[in-house]
Length: 255
Ligand code: NI
Image 1 (cartoon, rainbow, N blue to C red):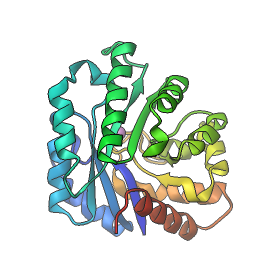
Image 2 (image 1 turned 120 degrees about the vertical axis):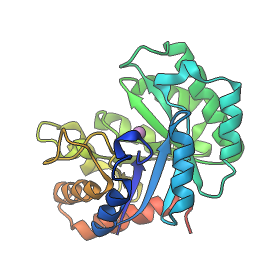
Image 3 (image 1 turned 45 degrees about the vertical axis):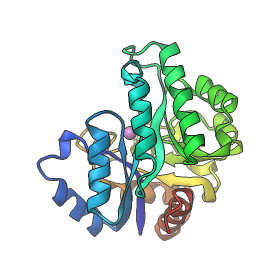
Image 4 (image 1 turned 60 degrees about the vertical axis):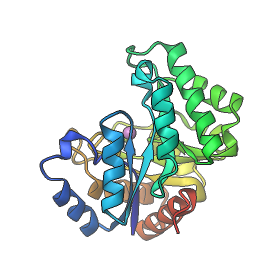
């Protein structure tokens, strides 16, 4: 049994064959998924998918790339949605210094507001980090994010920051990059994260694992991520799939 903790089945890339993709996920052993909404279009779609499927849950947040578009109205909207029984986390949120649509100070402010919201509604958070690790850790500390905990989604930084994340009550989620032939950091991270803090994800339709790299990703491929982690840790696929599923159920408080 597998739990894909970060999917975007709510985006247009799945409009043609969403049901078939879900059937393939089931066949691959993917029992649970969290669909992550991040803007005006994808958030309602995440809720809709969670309402229609008993094994699908939703996370709602505002993406840092679009931080400049978030107003009090969106924040209030997120707070209302957080009460939905299938909403299990706030996010994705964070900092993205790769794109410059939203200035850094605006991204930081929107990130802070969402951490504060998560604490108010008592839900964990999902972090998107691109080229911003040190600022993210600093901000998580300042806002005392350890009170709700969270996921470092598709963790792709060096192993040196892992302990700080663990100390803040965070889980480390690994995706497709752990399977990439030239990716050394995620492989090192896969070996050192304590098993009880490890999660797996696809982040589909992005970051398809080897040998599907470059193609559209889908939840069924989370199996490839689990297999690679098992190989790197010199353990069995069964142990990785079972433990990461238990971790995700506990983290999202799914009964
Ligand atoms: Ni994502």
